[in-house]
Length: 123
Image (tube, rainbow, N blue to C red; front, side, top):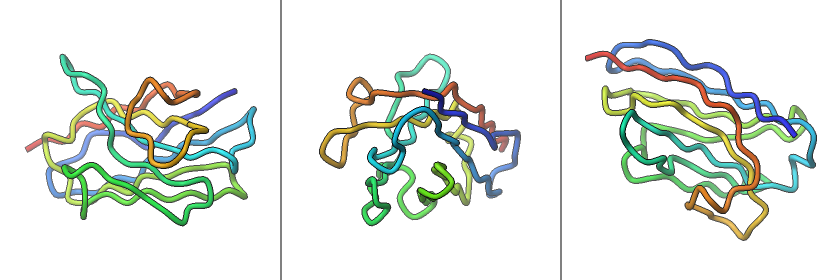
């Protein structure tokens, strides 16, 4: 099983980034997917989730209206479009897969995790 996150980088406040997470080694279309983030010295927190079909999404209040999660089951890939980025969005972003009823907001309930990609937003 592998989840390969990419797309992070250094941007200025107000800019946009698109994260990607390519999955392999499991039946991607059978799993809901989530994005989490962890800032230095803080616990890992939920950002967004998408159902296995892509028909339903769920967002943390802190990113609602700015971030959009989507998936392409034909490409085994989940995305996180991040707009109007703020310095407080700075963190390592992780994608994860879960096979429990949607939505799942707790990190420990996710079965598979990617390695993370760093997003740094300067003011």
